[in-house]
Length: 369
Image (tube, rainbow, N blue to C red):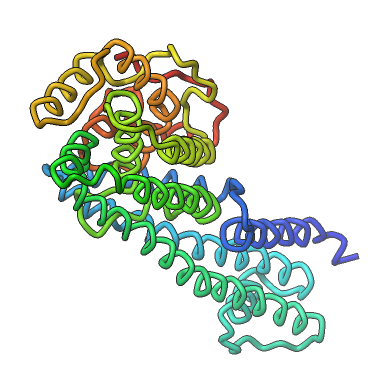
């Protein structure tokens, strides 16, 4: 009868423990991108705190130093939140089955969870519950330890390509700079290898930044580098070359653009950011025609061979860009990416997309040019 009176405590305790376990499975174990409400809520609250602190820094480098701590602290915060849920949940269970005061139940729970062994266990059923709690605590900590090498391997692979791009496209990277450098070196015939390399990079990016979602917020070792601006520079380079350069068409560039916009859309959709999911070729993009002409004028002055019909070149470029424009800008704002032309330097429409995490959002087109 006593246990029946405290049965709600057992139910609530089991629910808290189960919620912590399921959250850890979604974040650490599941091999596909699965949204987790607990993780999202914690990271949202933490992001607001970091935005406040970073906003008090006068330079981007200062803000970057602050935001570099966001993802690591968020990752450790997830573990703390899961252990707290387990601690509270088992406190309720111990209180219900051991007939002791709440204080004693908390001591039992903490002793078992952190394997301290100082609590006096006088009944077999209490000992069994303690063993279960200790096992859950060890498993949660082991999951984090096993997760870190996988995550840092993916991070290292991502950043290797971002650093290599700086050699080709400058820092911050730009499509115009990359095309001009390839022209000066006479290496347009080597672009096929470059496109194939980045097609693979985009495929890996889509997989790792949804299954290991917090990886999206780990910042590059250098403040002016970012996986988002690198992606934008590569996609803009391929789009410009396809649309405006008078050189033989390389189908591999088309595959790279498709791999890129699919990856950016998938990641943006995972974070439930607002962008146009089904753009049409004539939808507006965030690049103005004057900006496009300015880049072509600079390339022409550098001797880059251009197609004579600029009107058609603009339509072709806009038709490529519209596929990734909204997702690119939304991700640049979400990750607080450093300045780069045609990506993080765009309008205010995507400045704080993280405020919409977890809410169904309407599909928005790109901001007007």
